[in-house]
Amino acid sequence: MIDNLLISSTETTPEVNFYASQNKALMRGESYPENAAEFYARVIEWLTNYVENMKEDDLFDFLLHLTYFNSSSSKVLLDIFDLLDEAGENGNKIVIHWLYDKGNETLQEYGEEFQEDFENVEFLLEEV
Image 1: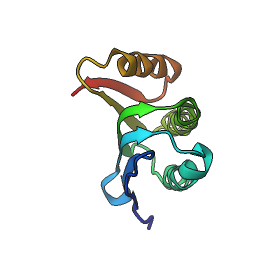
Image 2: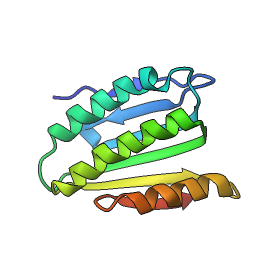
Image 3: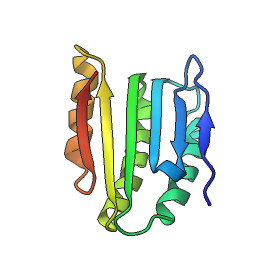
Image 4: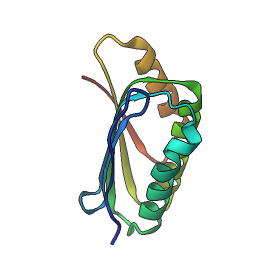
């Protein structure tokens, strides 16, 4: 059984709520940690373990509502999406909900760019 991963938000890092038993994950807030690789290491480790234990046809919902992220966080997001895309390629249904605030065209455009890069996940852009 995979434990949940719960990380409280800080001024520079997002809230992380990953619930294995519910097949859901939520990350929200701002992401500009001094060392993105260090902060996200636990997130990547959890997702890697989760994906390796998915059964074919499992559904995983990943809600992502970042109001700001820096370039090093963007690189980690690509790594996360690559991992999820690979799970989708293996027959799992992965849905990424890219949530962005109404009128935030920059984050909408980032979501559109990410959406174009991944074929094996359902990437939904959702204005909130």
